[in-house]
Image 1 (cartoon, rainbow, N blue to C red):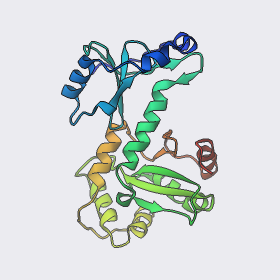
Image 2 (cartoon, rainbow, N blue to C red):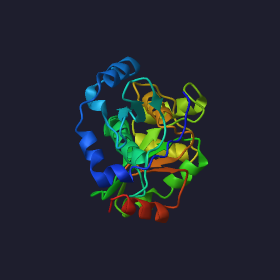
Image 3 (cartoon, rainbow, N blue to C red):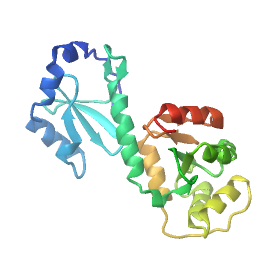
Image 4 (cartoon, one colour):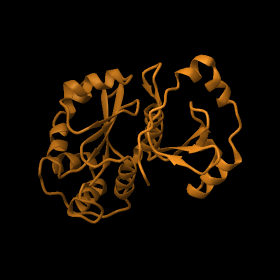
Length: 243
C-alpha cells in the first residue's frame, strides 16, 4: 500500500471547538462497511473520528489508518497538531502498541523483575544478537532501579532459522530465565520443543515494523531501537512515566 506522511494543521479545529463537535458525529456507514471488508473480525470500537474533519481513525492490532468519510480512500501517515506541537498519530500508536504487546500475556514472556517494580520495559530480543547480550549484562542495574524487563522473541533470521530454533529451546527450557542468560553468554542450550509463543512474538514484531534487536518498548508505548546504556534507559523509563 502506498505510504505517505500527512501533515495537517488542526489548530483551527481545536480553537474553534469544531474538532470536539466532530468527535460527537456518528461514524458514516460507508466507513463501517469498508473497514469491515478490509479488517478481519472488525468491531465498531476500532473506528472513531480523527481530529480532522472528514477523516476517521481506524486501529487494528498495532496498526493505525485514516479513512475518508465516503470509505473510498485510506491514508497511512501522521497527523500533526501544529498548535500543540503533537504528533497525534504517534500518541495513538503508543496506546495501541502497549495494548498489542500486553495482549500477548506476560505468561508468554520471559520476565526478570525486581520485588516492587516501578516501571516495565518490554524487549524484542534475539539470543544471537550481541547488543541484546550487552543489554542483558546490565539487567542487574535495571532491576536495582526498579525496572522489570520482559522479553519477547524476535529471531532476526526469521521463522525456521537456527536462531528461531534456539529461541524455541530457550522458551521451552525447564528454567527459561537461566536458559536466556546462558544463551546470551554464548553457552550451548539443550534443544527442546514445546508449545511456545516464539512465532506469535515474531509476527507481532513484524506488524510493529521491528527490523532489528534489541527493540525496547517503554511503559507509555515509546520505542527505542537498539542498545542504550542502562543509565540512559533508566532516564527514559522515568520520562515515560515509570519510577
